[in-house]
Length: 221
Image (cartoon, rainbow, N blue to C red; front, side, top):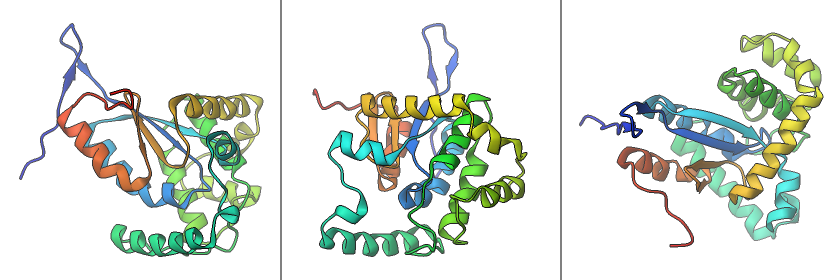
């Protein structure tokens, strides 16, 4: 069966590219699990993606969430079961307890911000960083490891410096403000025309919305 791609046009008849905002952090195993599936949707629907890394340590207290260590033991145990389910579902091979996780993801996140500021697609770096963290058990808080991942994925090492720039930090903080304004409270969150799809397990629903071209759902309905 052939997939139908809906082509949106503006009032002058020109084709419109759908835009998707992706709020996430390299710290998030769920963003990692959904990254490959997201790339499939990008190709399928011709999406323009705005990657917006955000500091989860600041999102949680602002939105009522809790960091993993403060969650009830039953929720922590269930998370491990869910990781195994999705590891099998997505056909991935990753560690449930990576050696250097949790870690400070801010530099890696800011490198993505710097790439976005330069109008460079960061998807390949994001994928390599995720693989480094969850599959290869590399320390993404270590500058040398980040530099190696940049090099291995075809990016120049100067992105390390760009990630440490004031402009990248401003963008990182702006993403946090935009996330909270959009109603985002976790990673990953995909925002299409103002509608939030929280979690990589909502990618099928995002695919449906893109395929049908339906109007966005709202809590004000």
